[in-house]
Image (cartoon, rainbow, N blue to C red; front, side, top):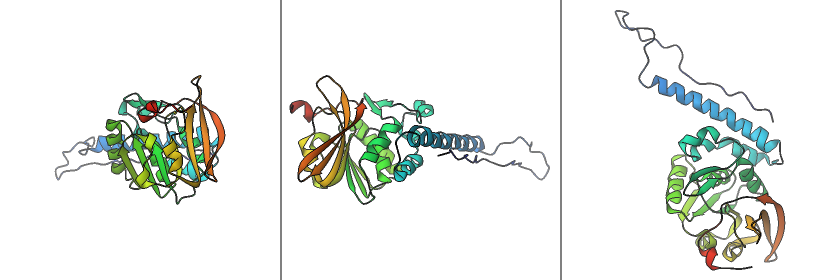
Length: 258
């Protein structure tokens, strides 16, 4: 997919002319410089986002058209700290505070693609973080329910998503190990932190035929992104690839299931 050229928006040549012709041609309207900078910034971010989709996603194994369109429509730079916005479309994760990260774009797209979403699903996300993965999911499904264990991140993500107009997402501060039972059952569950085992509540709240995409950590600290499908009430497991996520914390530390 070839990146389209972004169209730069800006002010035309504006002159303020008084009856006496005394206003200089270089006069700037109030806020004009800010508008120019904002337009230029948005045009730049659009080009970077198009390049991200083309070079990091479509050029690899992301083939789901709806996933590519969703990734191309979400302003990822608004989900990272302001000082890191210049790196927001690069091919690596970024810190978002409180020891947490926003996953690299490819991993977000890959997890979303493996969830095999059709547009009518109710999806649970464990680990809201900045809210970016939830925003991508919101473009593809009916409802997204996201649980974040860090209170500050939960409040920030909830506010950010509402301000940006993602109104089919509900964020809760809580321990994702227990899922979100009153909002289930779910057609899909995406877990954005590494777990030593599959939390039983997540599988229980999954509909028959549903899918969980989760990074599972082995005893030697190797993490593998894993697809778990519910078939006949039993898990059917497929290993996808090795990854590196921040660990799941909270209730999982009290439940040492091998």
